Image 1 (cartoon, rainbow over the protein chains, first blue to last red):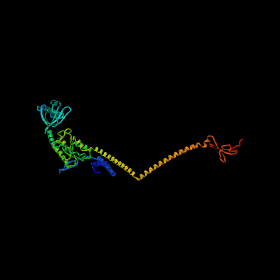
Image 2 (image 1 turned 90 degrees about the horizontal axis):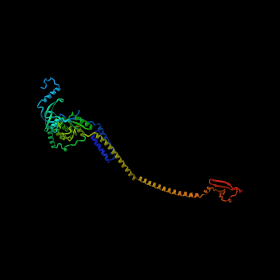
Image 3 (image 1 turned 120 degrees about the vertical axis):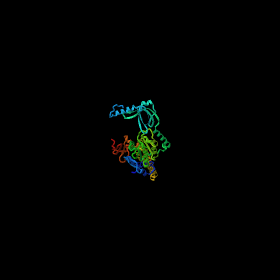
Image 4 (image 1 turned 30 degrees about the vertical axis):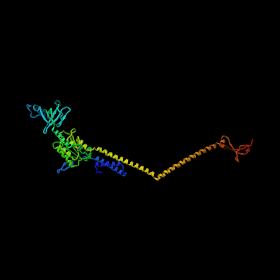
Length: 72
Length: 405
């Protein structure tokens, strides 16, 4: 869960909601979707709160290869 | 020499006067025709126009006052037009500027720059470079965004501010380029190619803040157009020029009118995401509750079904019917009995009304002779000395028969 990107977590959250909405499943599965979904939602919220824009700069190396380095 | 005794050191004003006099006394300069391309054309509310006439190597400030414009009735002027202007040269002391005070304007035709723009546009359009079918979709939430612009530009800071606010989840890769001057077209093309070679960016923003048409000219160059066209990564253009489209705008997959608008177009707004996450969270709870109550309902239904089939339940039901029936029986019996006792009470009442006790109650008495307890109803039955018991309503009186006196 910790390594999921926002997009991945969000997509899984949507899937969990859709599955739960469908409702044709054993109770255990439903509870699983619910718990997973809640964790994913929390994860998404955390990512949104913590997110910080990263800025890098691209330059051509001496070997004519693109190299990324921090900007400012 | 205008100053008969020229001072060894001029004040600025003195020198300006001198220049002005010098120019205004020159016959050629007081009625001159000059050819060039209009740039930086501005019309003020006063009705005066200002522009620069330029060719490849030089430029000349021009003023076209309202009165002169009214007199000559010139065509609509705009940047990029090639004209011949007639007027007089003078020195504007306040700004230290030599300028042409225009009296008449004649069009030469569209300016060379403009002509080149039109030709390139027509050629690229014929090649299909502007076709809607070539436009690639812009990813909705790019993890990496490439930006091609000048690292020093205010435009870059503005874009980073927008991206930081709207969508800080993304990573920015700046591919620096000159966005003005002769090196600009090749530099921009290289920067776009470099982002493609690196390959991580999911969308490229090509941006430059607003400027005159010359300052933005790099974005009308074929080198830039080709680089955008061959970019595998979709390109958003954000060249600060509200009204006119540059060639780069036309080739780009999406055209925004400013750098900040381009940044906003490249990413979703995190505020929407926050709301969406909350919505989904609520949906989870709602659906779970719906699921549970559905399950409960099913369970209840099954329980009822099961109960109906349970032999114990059957027995209980029969038991209850039995109970109900016997209760009914009892009630009926009770009813019959109470009817009977009602009738009995009627008979008793009648019997009672016939009782001798009632006669006694009206003041009569029953006299009995002690010993054999016979009721005395005649004087023949007693003799003096006999003991008698007289029954009255509230008890007995004991008496002795006295001799007749």
